[in-house]
Length: 93
Image (cartoon, rainbow, N blue to C red; front, side, top):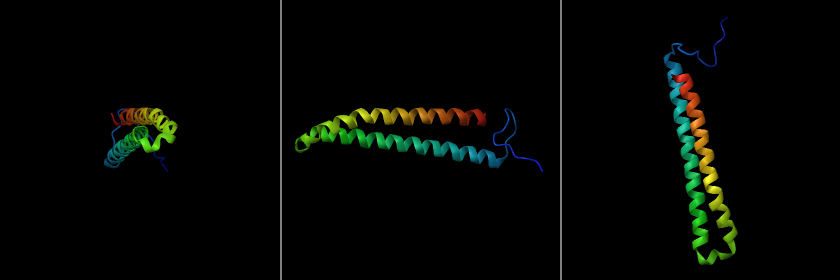
C-alpha cells in the first residue's frame, strides 16, 4: 500500500484535486484576513466613537484601549496572511 504525501515535492506534478485544494486554502486565507480587517475596523471605530461622544466620557479609558488594540489586531492578521501565503506559494510553485 502506497502512502500519500502530505506535501508535494518541489517540481512534482500536481493533480486537479491538489490544485483545487490549494485554491480553497488560498481563498480561506483571504477570508481570514478580511475577518481580521473587519474586526480592526470595528474596534477602531468603536474606540473613536467612545472618545467623541460626550455621554461616554466615563468610558474614556476603554476608548483609548480600543484605539491601541486595533493596530495590533491588524498587524496580527497581516502577518498571518503573509505567512500562510508564503507557504501556499512554496507548495504551489
